[in-house]
View 1 (cartoon, rainbow, N blue to C red):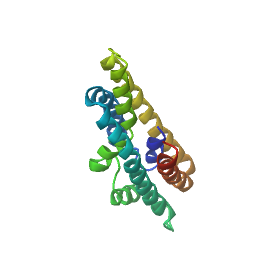
View 2: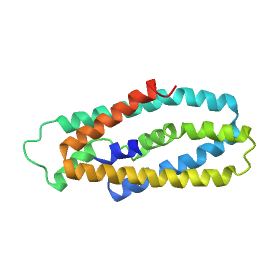
View 3: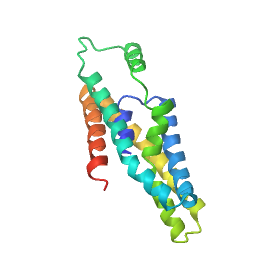
View 4: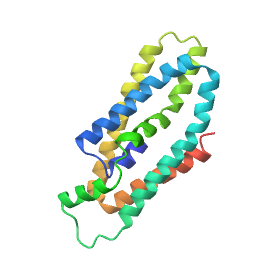
Length: 177
């Protein structure tokens, strides 16, 4: 949710909202299933690398957002001008950025799926469906929260969103074991 809130400050069109919440929910649904079938070595390897990939991606996205927010804009841009400026930035709700973001934010679900498999949890499909739905709703909530804050606070919200992504990147490195 916090990643989506940071992204939602700047990228919150209907298609972006759909893509981000769909992919977050889909990957949170799939990862426990993959973990269930994968085995301990693969789950451990991916969860170990995932925090570094997630940290790098979030840091780069946050740094780019911060740079754009701090650039001087002498005149408040029109909606059309803002949309043109946003197109210059790589939209994190598209392509490889979206895939990597979806994977690295759901690696914990992979490990959870593996743990459920070890414990003999027979309801893995139902559990995965619930996880996916909740993740999609939380992602959408985060985007709407980011969008709302962005509209209320303007440039300070963009700066705050960028800082949130950078802090999340740092937390992936130092607080996630």
